[in-house]
Image 1 (tube, rainbow, N blue to C red):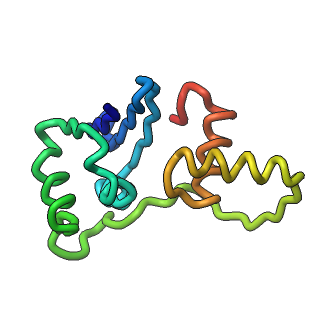
Image 2: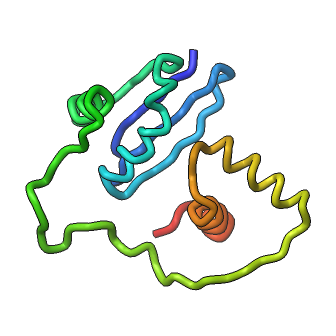
Length: 133
């Protein structure tokens, strides 16, 4: 059976998806909001997974999956909000159709992620295989 492991690691939220062949993929999120946004991908197919959530996240995850409501923090706070990922630069790139097809295939395998997120994660993994510090 497929599994979803949800836990915290190095101050990041992690969703680890394990398929029926025991192949695992991990997605890390710097915020709780990012975690819940990605959980939205699994809401309609959750019955296909065995859900394993650490005790510290269990009630928040269960509440979100049952109600769709994200935990509230009670308004704006200094330092709140999504932290910047870096500098945004608009680029246009021409690639052979075979490369675009491969990109779309890989994106679909990783879930419903944007092209920007896919390219960002791919480049970071290429340049920093041990992780970005």
